[in-house]
Length: 382
Image 1: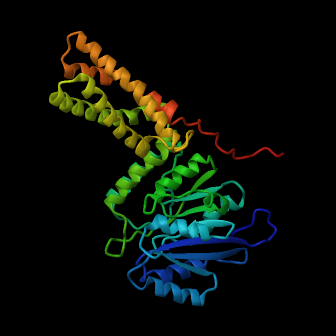
Image 2: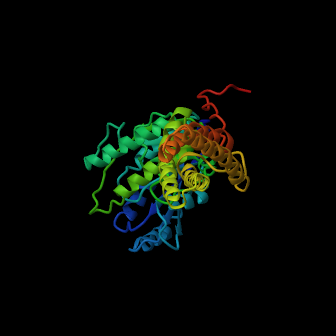
Image 3: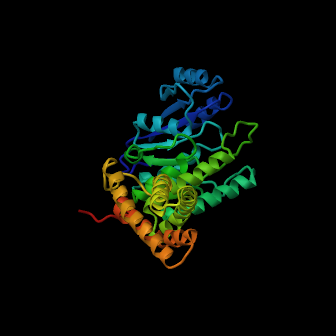
């Protein structure tokens, strides 16, 4: 049984957000199992967010709403994905704590009461479930899914400095103040790496506990695909790389810089072959490659608007590329004067300005403050 933090006997309210898309076969039983965990110290608010289901899920939800006062229904006008449904549900939640519950019966709602314990005792701000820590029952399915999940969790941990075992687990319980403070951007299954990244950056007290798992097959309605796995991989970089340690950022920029450098060289070679002018080919190639570099930087590595406004930031970037571009042109001409072929001179110049490009972007265009300390487990009393 759940106990309130002060043992005063007050009732704790748990809001449970249930994203639903084409779950007419399992929604009713799922809701009934969730409602069964309520007791004299735990009241429930169930928020079913129907993501424009094409079956009778919304009709089932309406019937449940008529039967149980604890149930609220929100319906999307179009299908936008699990992350979007959760974002809608979190905004509507009014409980002390907010949990995620899929409608597909893969998880046991009784585990939610266990996940609440560290929150109720004041030890945690967020409690995450893990299918790999539990000694309870597990249906054995999909080895490659499991392997992919472990890889994504490992990669996420490298960026967040957490030691989670199951980033992709559905069960997550938050204090309402925490989850309603998070700006969720992902509409689909990218929600999982995004939320882990953002709560880690808030330096909260994050706990992980084992949960049971009864995985279903694709014939039974499982929806996550390989495409979602690649999206999750991208999201790990997108939401974490901007505060990663400098060596990791440099490694990521090495990939971005290599792509930009290859583009720079190819455009230069084309323009020089057509015009025969170094003064035209070098600046033009550098500028176009710098535009590509900027797009890759804000998509993967750096965060926009950290120090400068979205209007000022491109101007700062333009100043940087003018300076670096001048260095690129000067170095290319220098090596040409030394007897190098145009292609060789350009390649050496482009390689030489790599670190100037990276450090200029990291500390001038996209400066990021060092992460703040983790919230202490035992905070000093004032």
